[in-house]
Amino acid sequence: MEEHRPRVPLAAATPYLLVLPAAAYLAVFVLYPMAQAVRLGVADPHTGGWTLEHVRRMASDLYFWPAVRYTLWITAVAVPLQVVLALSMALLVNTRFPGHTAFLYVCAIPLAVSDLAAGLIWLSLFTERGYLNAALVQWGVLRHPFNFLSHEHPAWLVGAIVTTEVWRATAIVMVVLVAGLQLLPRDYAETAAVFGASRWQTLRHVLLPLLRPSLQTALIIRTVLAFQLFATVVTLSGRLVPVLAGETYFWYTLYRNPHVASAYATLVLLLSALFVWVYLRTLRPEGEGA
Amino acid sequence: MTLRKLGLYAAALLLTAWVLAPIVLIALAAATPREDLYRWPRPLWPERLSFEILSSFARQEAVLRALGNSLAVAGLTIVLATLVSAPAGYALARYPFRGREAVQLGILATKMFPATALAVPLAVAFIRWGLYDTLLGVALVHTALSVPFVILIVASVFRGVPAELEEAAMSLGASRVGAFIRVTFPMALPGLAAAAIFTFILSWNEVFAATLLTVNHRTLPALLVHSVVAEGAPLHYRYAGGFFLVLPALVIIFVIRRYLLTLWGVTVR
Image 1 (cartoon, rainbow over the protein chains, first blue to last red):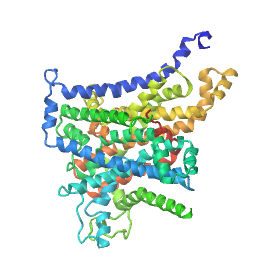
Image 2: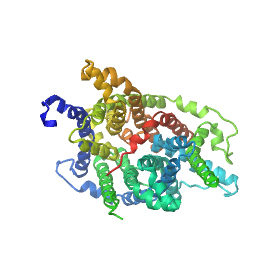
Image 3: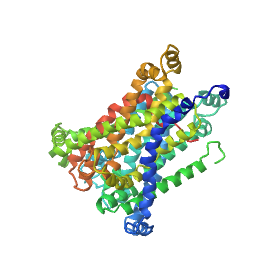
């Protein structure tokens, strides 16, 4: 029927004209810098040709491998914890107990807390004269305050960072999962119960498979964000626990070298793309994956 | 059955405490007199409260300037992000057009884009364009980060305003633009306000780009990172800073609560 209607060129173009400003803006401020990051990472500042000098400098730096390792480690520990915790929150919200909306909003509060604020908040707990030591000494667990945030105990340092990240970033996973659960027809779970499935079986065999697209989205968002880990780490550990985004910052502001900083930024970009690809391959929504 | 209910409430209470306790503790830390913070053994519960730390933090000239910068950047970002993204959101809500899926995929991709990768090349470009160390430069980056979110909120807002009302106004003689201004816009206003508030918190919270792009015109997060990393600011300064940063979060989740699921609920298929 469309083709019989007289064509009004302007009306047909309207949606495209409306989308144009946003598209143009993102092209200038996202696509262009993305290409620039890659270019700066391999450009010779003197000749303008390309060189692997910056990448080599990055890879031979003392902090490079620790930064790669710590970034991956913290992500590997924090993200599964966030998913499990967020899933419990989302399932609780989904039971629709009286007060579940208030519970949802409270759990969502960290969504509006920055990584910097979260780092400073948890610093007040983990620092040598912080709440944690005050409590442990008062309850007789410790005799003297323990320095959780020192280079002598990297495991504790990473533990503090992971705790802070789990506290801050579980909210985003929870919201994705709550939205996913709300899309599921309620009678699926009820039918499973009628046929004698226990709550655990219903969760394992009915809800979780149906939730797969949401879980996948949550995993992608969280992993990409985890590779950008910066202020939490810097406030809790300084440079004792080097991470990729932190090195980007130090190379740019401390060593004034935008090329090596760009090489780091490009690495973050590539790692993120790689993980998105892996997730999309392994967690197919149609169920042919696992 | 009742045992299950008890378990539910216990779990909900435990998780609520896990989320809220750190916020209460930073508020207490920021309201503890300075000498009590450094005393040992430290009492678990402060014996007295004072505004000494907070008021001395808030009275510093650098902090006040950074606060002003943060607010100015957030304000600029709200204006820019609304201008750039509101039309796209309206298009997504009202028009079935070819390429819609591509637009939605683009939104999803930019939403998850690692902002860390943008800051360095933009800093280099901004030095050339004369935007380095300016509030406008920071606002431009914050706008890029908020565009996908604002499009999503605005689209959901306009989907909530029935197109029939707009059509009715047009059949009564209003032009398309007139119908939009007189009918749709007033009804969409509360939702647009929510989008503005979300943009505010995104800009207020953004640390990395603001830190890399400013030297003399730092926003509050950039100032705090600088004082912590480069100057080793004392604990009480850090606590006061953390408390100030977290304050808006408490209000804002409540204000944008209707759009929480809209913002993050879209999945990758």
